[in-house]
Length: 422
Image (cartoon, rainbow, N blue to C red; front, side):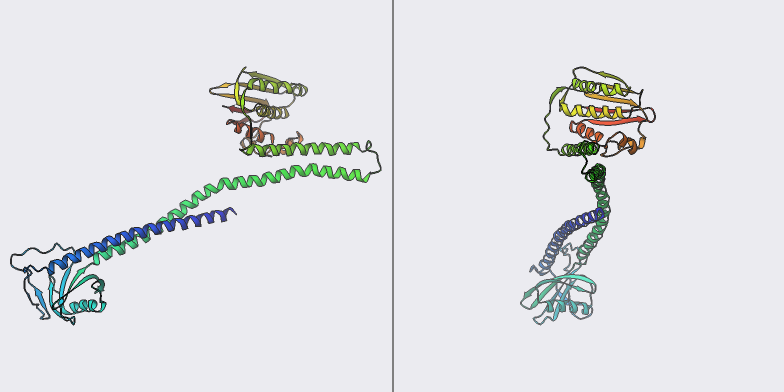
């Protein structure tokens, strides 16, 4: 599924970028083509105006060496020829397009001139272009009393520039598309990775929740069958089955409440009322309620709470965090063990630290203990009656308060949980 999503993203991305590149290259080519065309027309008209100006200084037409026409001879001492960037020449014809005179600086054979004039006579356009002997030529025709004057200009260099521009655009476009493809693929994989991880977590969450609900449902179903099989017995005699059903429904109620609570915490729109409160008193009140449990399990509890520390947040939620962490510490602290709690100001924040002795948490599990339904040791956690949701709830509450929660552990020695609140 994610591969298809990535490939679809790549295709859409490449199509959009290709269209943008094509439009950009077409615009650049069109502008360049118009500029080159304007330069050609300007130069062609300039050559034509120079050769056809009636100033009497063009010299006389005389037959060329091959006797096929007349060449214009430059007047003695006249240097007013145009600074031409391309080869150009002029042909004079009669009304039937027969060459009567030529004006060129270069020696060209009669066949070339006849081919050039044939291109013009068949074109019927006063200004156009054609290809002859591998070169590109532009021409302009002016009608006069004796026939036609045709001025030719070699534009091969200009056409080569446009052709090279097309090749350059094609090569650059292909290279850019290849680079963009691999770059997009790299970033697409990175972008999809969190989505894939969230999807996998959601699947695991559903599977774990289903598994947790499956067990009490099976117990309830079995006990209900026992009751139905002994329907003639009194309720009092069957009370143990009813108590088991009630116990499992309480477990399901606790689980569903925790799941709903996590859902509400994930919804940023949930209306949580924050106010300024004495967080030192809130932490101490939780400890007072748990002293009896600590005493019953024969655990030593030491605590140090800095008085009158205040926090802007929700008092009940902060109490719940302390309750979860203390309950977790009590569960995993062996008899004769010790729990230490400190709560004090740390720079601009408040820092709650709860440390308990015990087996500790393996290093590979420390980063994942805040995941929903995650257990470093499933058998021990189930024995203690947990669902693996307590630390996930604590993390959600702390993050709602813009704080941080993390754990450190030394195996077979101690485990410490830290809650840093701004």
